[in-house]
Image 1: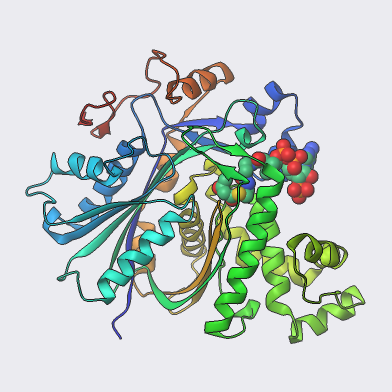
Image 2 (image 1 turned 30 degrees about the vertical axis):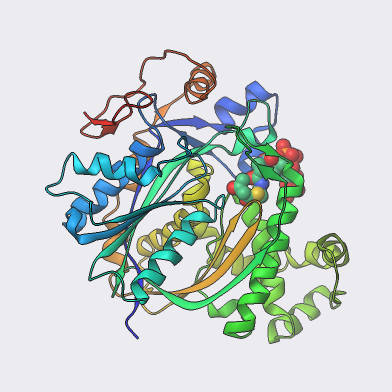
Length: 440
Ligand code: CAA
């Protein structure tokens, strides 16, 4: 069977940054380590006044098309994943296609365009749609462009405010891909939940603590469902496990849960028993709360073991290097985690071709998806071609007062006039609601 997967990736961060320890914590009267150690974030990205989900998505897509030497005729579908959409009729992909058509010969009249919504999971769902489209033989030799783009803002004063972020990830899905091949097996955990929602409102209504529990419960179900098709998993099966990363502290909890699940009944559990001195109490529980309560003591000890710490540093830590500097990009977040792992591997000179990753995606509302990926021969060339470090280093460092202005500029309910902090540099810019985005 021909391999199908991700052939190329490009990212576009919002061009402003907020330093959580230096700038945010003092204003909130909090210990900086609550953010840097507890939540796990150093900085967050924000869009400048001339950026939005369309321009960030279009700029990422243009970088990808230029680097791969593509023209519109090479792309048969454009899927945008976002939970920051501003148009209840036209999908954001039409706006992005409109931008790209300003700079390339030809147009996207032949391309199927859509917008996927399931909170942060939608980026992965868009990749799945592209995969199925190619596998069904409907692509006529063309590639799919998937753009995950979001401005993740919370109301000021909401506990989620510390986890904001903004940026886009563009990914090209093709046959014989260069970066990763997607496996056919997937697992899901899905339930109607109300811990995080945006019914006709820009900022989410969030029950933060509950949202963490829902994430973990759905992720566990997805892992069990994945194992029902792919067989039992073991921690040594995967070089990296990128999770959806609303903030790195969330990944710490997901990783511990995943490790415990994957080690049940294995040699690792036996080895851990000699270190921890007992087996966990773990029967079948109807509710997540009961399960969590039953295993809490064991998990607290597990996370302190040498064995778990070594695994976490090797398999999970590399996935959060980038997200700790950018905050939550919602739909792009798990794709940043994958990129972060591969970028770290490239920097460490590690060979990844043929190695496997287990990817844990999640969207509030709520649904988790687990699937495996195999790294392809061209991964290193693709990943080292990205200018992630430059983009992050070039961001304008906001003062707290400037941050509040930027927050207001991107609040659709407010009309404020603020000067730009950076200057457009040959890129698509936002020129006002209902008007075309232009290139400057
Ligand atoms: N030094 C070190 N650590 C500290 C500390 C200090 N001085 N002060 C606090 N901490 C630790 C806490 O112990 C805690 O760690 P644990 O969770 O491991 O116990 C961590 O820092 C966070 O502290 P709090 O729980 O007190 O933080 P909070 O209540 O202010 O906010 C939150 C946490 C509720 C998750 C909030 O960030 C939030 O609402 N976020 C938005 C919702 C969210 O992201 N949920 C995640 C799941 S839903 C999802 O994934 C979808 C999505 O993208 C939104």
